[in-house]
Image (cartoon, rainbow, N blue to C red; front, side, top):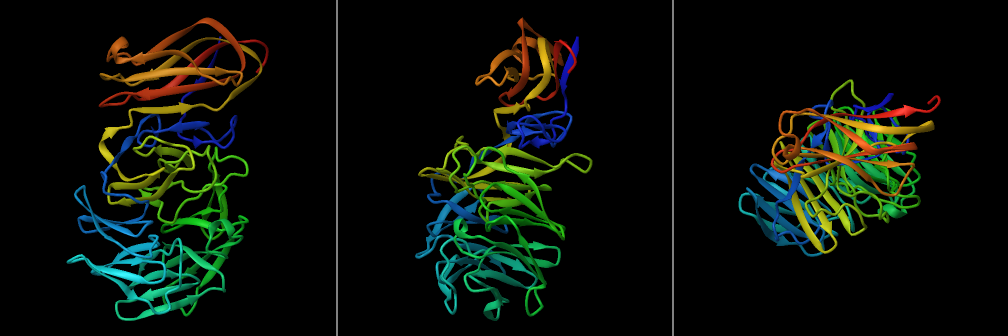
Length: 468
């Protein structure tokens, strides 16, 4: 009798269906393997926070003291005070191009001008700046840096230092467009494409500027064969979401591809909007939007490692509260961390909302699916065994399998508090009639109510026929 054991779950999604780094899987949703890498359990849930007030796709979310402001793709500006959302204004000639708080004002970019709102009394001046403000139809981010705010202004970088508006502090070639802004260490990072329309861009660059030099300090091209969709930067690195193929690059002095998002489909596309990425508790979080892919899973992903010593992994952390995870009608507009809070804006066909990550509500079902495990000779599977923490009321662990790349899952059994009580930590399943297979896939579903089960290991016992 030989054992097939899965006890490492911390590698995240693999692009390959049969192979990947240690601890990787073919698919998962809602799993928390970072709190304790020796166990998998369920993440907390995204819960709709905005009620019925938000009626467009929010592209930017920014904090100010205890308030949170949002800016949507039809020009709507919302204020959130302790979970109560108010529509402050619908700005004309706007697609929610960019927004940031600086000093005593909320700055917001429109099609061809820049407005600002005085935070002390919510008074708006839509035409605060009109001189040499370039017409931008999609994204024109605004970001505080040093003692000024940087404003993407088409092929120019604008600067406002609370006394002087300079529309062209930096200039890029004709036809180029600043798609996103970030900060890496002492540098402002500008993601610049050779076309404003992401689907028509053929080249994408990272430009770095120290904020005082007369021009940018240095640059690098991201050789994707398309533009840069979004960047997420921190003290030591810039994560680059390039083109529409789902490739993730990391710049740390050189640009290297670190991951490709699976399930997008050949010749299909998906994008990450400039406001839909954030650093949350040491992980790079991002959401998918746009493109043509009907098979990509749309929600909030993480990329990173639990801590040093573990592999970096891609994990589908949080489906939106609407529950839909696939289809071109689902877009993630913004993913924004504010302290310990996480906000996610979304569109589901004609419904819109802003979710907030709950501190109390669990995702009531989380799924893990193994890579395809292939042997060189047929093997007879006879038993399976689960290892888990003592179960609490309402908790259930379901184990299923596929053999020889079948199209459907077969249920082996469940471990549950209702059946097994709250003291056992293992459960053995007989297969009834043993089965032979060359390929084996394993699915684990964790479900519960107020609490969720935690699984550490699963073993399949088999009779080996010949050498593996």
